[in-house]
Image 1: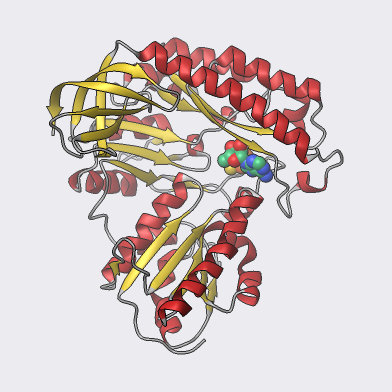
Image 2 (image 1 turned 120 degrees about the vertical axis):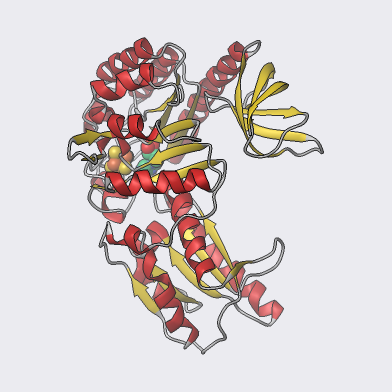
Length: 447
Ligand code: 5AD
Ligand code: SF4
C-alpha cells in the first residue's frame, strides 16, 4: 500500500439484511464526523466501504467482483480509492480478503466498525489493518449521536444469534446474542424522531430475544420496549424484525392487539414445511406449532399481514417434503415472503450433510415456491383495494408529482398529488399489482 491523501468523499455500499443497512448508516455518520462527505451521484468516491453479506454464496461473491470493478475504475480515472471491506464477509474471510485483494486497505467486522476512523488514519499512511474483534456492545457507545435519518428508520436493538440453525453463518459472523440497554434505545429512538423519523423498525437477528431493564429496574422483553417506545411523541409507527418462532411470547402477541402504533405486520420465518427438514435445520418448531402460533397472532390482530423466509433444497429434502412447504404456504397465505435456494456455508453443519440437492432440482422447487408466493402476494394486494389507509411517504416516484410510501401492511403504495417526504397521508388503494398498489390521495394527517 502506498501512502495516500486523506479522503474527501466516501460511499458506503450495503448488501444483505436491514441490520447491514443500519450499520451502513452509522458508518456514514462516523465518516461525516471526520469531515468526509458523501460522493456525489455518478462520481467515484475517495473512500469506498463495502458493507458485505455472507448469508449465501452469491452474496459473498459480490465483494470480490466489486473490488475488481472499483480498482479498474480507479485506475482508469488515475486515482484508486481507499477500500474498506466491512460486514459479515469481513468477519468470516478477513485474512483471505487481505491476501487475495491487495487493493483493500481495511477489513472491519460488524462488531468493530466504530474503530473505522483509527483504521482510516493508518490506511492514509499506507498501512493495512484488519479488525474483526467482537466487543459487541462497546461499538454502540463509541458511535456518534444520530442526527439525520429517513422517515422510516432502523434501530438495531439486538445483535447476534444463539439459535445455530444448521445452515446459517450468522451465529459465527455476528456472534452470540446481545441486547442493547433499554435506556440507550429510548434515547436513540427519540433522537431519530427529532431527526425526522416517523416510523422505527426495531432490528435484530433474533429481535424477539431482546431483553432489558426499564428505568424502574423492571425486567422487560420486546413487547415492553415497544409499549414504551409507543409513548415517544412524534413516532407514529413501530415495526420489528426478524423473529424466531421459539421466542414469541404472550406479551408480544397481546401487544399486536393493544398498541395502535405497532403496525399489523409480522415477518416470521418458517424455512420449510416438513418436520423432518425442520429438525435437521435445528429449528425448534414444527409446521403445526408454527401455524398455531400464527393463529394466536391473527386472533390478537385479525388484519395482520404475514411474511416469511424459505429455503428450498436443504440437504436431504425430498420432493414429498418440498410439497409440505407448498402446503404450508397455501395454508398461511403470506402477504409477502423471501425464498432462497440452499447455499452451503463453510463451517456450518449442513454444509457437510449427506444428500446435497442438485442445482436443477433447487431451481425447479424455487420457481414453484415463488409462483405460489407471488400468487398469494397479488391476492393480498387485490383484497386491499377499496381500503383507505395511512401511507408514510418515503420518497419521490419515477414520474414528476408521484410519491412512494408504505401502507401499514408494508405494501408499497404510489400516488400523485400534494405531499412531501415524511408525510403521513390517507390514501384509498385503487389498483393492485404484484409488488405495489396505486393509491388516491385523501387528506394529509400530519407532516
Ligand atoms: N442458504 C440459503 N438461505 C439461507 N438463509 C440463511 N442461511 C442460508 C443458507 N445457507 C436464509 C434464511 C434466513 C434468511 C435471512 O436467509 O431463510 O431466514
Ligand atoms: Fe440464522 Fe437461525 Fe439465527 Fe436466523 S435464527 S440468524 S436463520 S441461526
